[in-house]
Figure 1 (cartoon, one colour):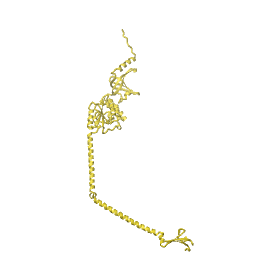
Figure 2: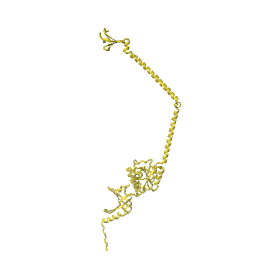
Figure 3: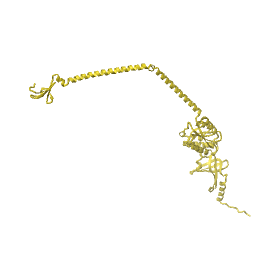
Figure 4: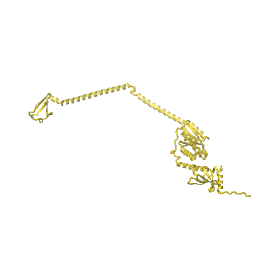
Length: 399
């Protein structure tokens, strides 16, 4: 008996394939490693590329919203590690990987991504010195962002306790390695900015470029730049450089060096205070010595050794001045008196009464003094004033 064969349409079989692939747990949120080939970005913002290895290849799509979180530029030949899910596109009868996350894979790709992001942020001014916030000289509270595991936290706390035991430390436990590191660091920085913290130490021990990659993410760089609190970066060893180092307000070669930069040394402060105190004492001694010499110089003067002699000398001077004042005043009075007598004598000599007393007379006609004979006529009535009395007369003859 012949078994009836089931015949599918293209859409039916495509739908079946789509259902199987897209519902498979393994093919949802899987990680894929390969080399990028022929990347192309369209006006929509979506980027299409082929991911291949030595034998096979698969088409991939990175949507624009996901590309915004990528810290590097996708280029042909770049080795990457991505996270994605399979999607079947029926109209073309093809499947592809929808990329959710992507990062460089291998030192060459990581170095390229590092340089690309560094160049991008530098052009935006995130590394500029004018944006660096000054570190406080005497912080009261320090925020420490690091892992609770490892030696970094203990090293930093030991340095802070030794150098400046007065400081308070708030710790934000953070993932410092792996895929969750960047998001964890950003969250810790945001949390610290909600606290009363004077300076933040961002610390991690040394490691490879891959180990430190969380500190090279763009999101971490922008979180550091946006922090209102100054941040000291102490990531890795002295030869390790991360993007976080360039954006931070101060880059320390190690976490311990970051702790030393964050606080002053109480022993050095004590020595400085002792130096200031010694300078003050020396200054006070010098001032006392100088004033003592001045007082001794004053004490050796005659006025202090024989004060009565000085008083007597001033007394004699006062008596002399008094005598000079009296003599000068008397002489001036006598001189003024003689002048007054002379003036009085002249006034008396010019007084009409005095003239009449000497036998002279004054002839008056119609109230006017007669000075010339031509001022009267024959038979004119005149008055003659004598020293004593007055005569009325009439002119009989004019000569």
